[in-house]
Image 1 (tube, rainbow, N blue to C red):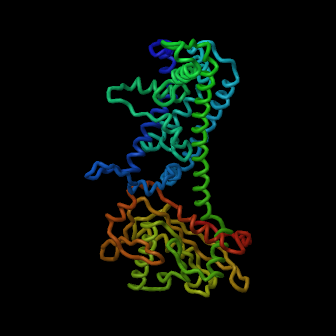
Image 2 (image 1 turned 45 degrees about the vertical axis):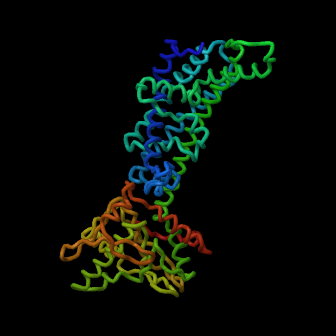
Image 3 (image 1 turned 45 degrees about the horizontal axis):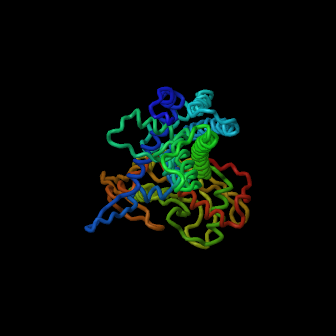
Amino acid sequence: MLLDEDAAYDAMLREPPLGQLGEAHLLIIRSARKMDAALYDQTSDESGFTRTRRTDFGRLVAGDEIAWWVRESMADLDVLKIKAAEAREALQKLLEDARNLQSKDAPTTYLGLVESVFQLCESNAAQVSRFLDFVTWLDQRDDRGPSILFTYKIWGSTRLADREFHAEPEMGEADQLRICTEWATGLRIRSSTTLRRVILDVSAEIADAMDPESYSGPIHVPYHRVSHRVANAVSNNFVTYLELLRNSCRDLEIEIDKAETLVALFDNEAFWQAFVNEVVTSGRTEETWWDVKQALAMWHATGNAKRLEEQDFCERVAAFANTEGGIFVVGVSDTPPRRVLGVQDVENRIKHIYNSVLSRSDLAPPGIKVREVLLDDRVGLTRSCLVVGIAKSPTVVSVKDEAGRLSYPVRRGPGMVRSDPDSIRQSKQFQKGYDWEFMDHIRETARASGDGPARSSGGTGRAR
């Protein structure tokens, strides 16, 4: 009746496409376990009390695994976006057919119900395969990757617990795969099959309605009495599972769009006009993520003084890269009341910036970008200014002086201090790609401008 040993039932669960759904879920569950181990430490005191605390990695993730994954994937964001969209579309197609299953008459046998789920997935074999490919690709990039499809943010604690799996030491791979297939298709909730759970619920309802003095012995529930209830429970569980996976992919796409927007802001003329307008008119002082320079001293120095100024500029660039990233706006007076003054000989100034940074430090594109921005001064004349953007680097950035000595600067508020490579490396141990998230802080400053992006005059500012 419960089909635990039924060969046909077992075969359907192990073979594609149902087996592929189970394989994907097993990868996700294992990944989630590794993510949890990385996020939290558990320590016991002398009394045996267990205390759970966030690790350094947990503080970096800050409760949003999907946003963390996107930050770590900046180098191949386009590929991630395509694969996430393909997986979402595949899940959506599966979801639509699973919802249709809800409206059909319940099969008269449990095996018939399982066959209907199998046939649904068989008719969507390409979609199942595409989803498994996505989960496998995430796992190959980082074995914590698939966990972004199984997060508290999307699933909530109850639904996570319904499908969490802690295999017994003696349980083989095939048995683990079978159980994960049951979870993925709605045939299992927590430690019990959906069929068992429904029969136990119905048995309890019958027992509650009976006079205990007039009846004793086991209660037998024939399948035809619960077929509709079992079918509804299975299809509802299956639909919920697909919805939550689909929503996870959708949330991933949203985070990718947000990340792309932050990067794209660097190439947005109107954005920089709004930002500089706010800096000039508000009298704001420099912050952790931005600095204003009337000019770079290295442009006007000669001889040994020039080399020292190049060294100083490269250290200030490295300080941004070693901390949270940031920008220099060049061509605006350093102190309030600020004015737009502009930069002359823009092409050579940009070359000088790149050549200095590339020759003296470990930083290189795409970790640094320089763009020209056209801004109006007080009397309405259009002047060329420069924005130098520095991403948070995934590795320690050092700067070499004329004697070959290395320095390791970091940003502290609006200034710079020197640090040691080990502490910087420790702060970056969970980072993979260049991180432009600081642009979100720059955007908040630009939004405070009364003129806003509409101040753009359609200039020809461009990234170099």
